[in-house]
Amino acid sequence: ASHVRTSRQGRLTFGRPVRGVSSPDTPMQITLQNVEKKYQMGTETVYALRGVDLEVAQNEYLAIMGPSGSGKTTLLNILGCLDTPSAGTYVLDSERVSTMNQDALADVRNRKIGFVFQTFNLLPRASALQNVELPLIYSGIRRRARRGKAEALLERVGLSDRINHKPNELSGGQRQRVAVGRAIVRKPKVFLFDEPLSNLDAKLRVQMRTEISKLHRRLDATMIYVTHDQTEAMTMGDRIVVMKDGQIQQNDTPLNLYKHPVNQFVAGFIGSPSMNFIQGRLEAEGDGLVFDEGHLRLPLPKEHHDGLQGYVGKDLMMGVRPEDIHDPDTMGRGVEADEIEAQVEVVEPMGNEVLLYLTTGKSSFVARVDPLHIPTVEQRVRLAVEIDKAHFFDLETEVSLLRQS
Image (tube, rainbow, N blue to C red; front, side, top):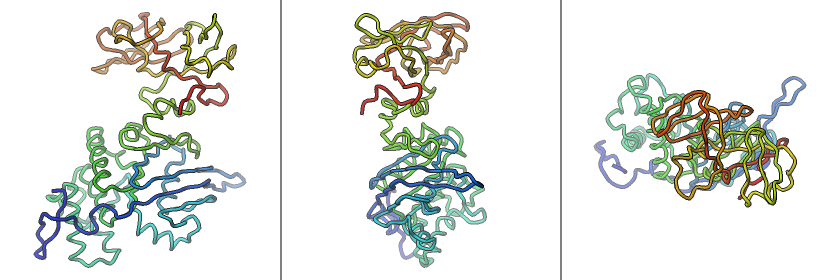
């Protein structure tokens, strides 16, 4: 049942949503302006965050991703009022929290924020029901009322038959749902997820991704999800913030991150296998331009000429995704591509596709091809490159030279 309520006799009955379990009345909006977080390490100042500007709209599902040490967890701690910025402004649901003391922060945290952590943080000796009830106990809600809300919540996340089970009697996915239920039961205005699926196996991660996405639609709430897994971010987030060295590199939709990365870091971070980077020189040839790697030459389409004209005679970095390199014999009609030749170093059959690790003799790259024709190691093969989908980056600044908004 999508909604249940508790009768006076304590039985679960169908009906309108239980107060405190339904969607938040006023999902929040978050604004960060020039936020910094720094630490003093002896005589050295270390920045965990630097110049972070971010807005999260009401009901939005925002994913934050980046490598270890990128600042994503520090940012989540500030968003969750577990920490305060060293500089800058943080406004949460019209309240300026960046200048609050610890007591005021704790009050905002308890009223408005629900956390779901990587380790679940469930009480091992308490049942699923008691774990979900815990935040309501701290809120001073009477036993009968909180019991009804907790039972309704566990029904909602599909655990009505597990209410008396302790965490060690539940599967990883069930423990995750208890942790989510505990966050929901207080009716927070924002949910913060800190890599909640990293301890689950691959099959269960796929299942829980679906469950959390359904939960977002059902609650119509603001959710912020921190992860290092790009599949989670790309499939779940309305927008994705990509971080590196405490700074936001790009804040965009999943499709724009993939198609129009702002720099080489974002281009290489999004996609699996990651984008190939091949260094070469841009040369003029007749009325056109050619990318010359030394062992391969690729004429560039006319639509690239204006953006690259200032780099003629200079070295630059070309980026091309493995899925844009094909076996010429299996390409569909109407696809324009230039052929190159390379030697196979490693073959990885993946079932519905094959990953080829290749070398030109100077540069190495990966191609994702159809399994119809699988080459052998050390074989020289012809490949078709969709050069109109290639990206080009400045060697020094690493900014994208052809990005379209």
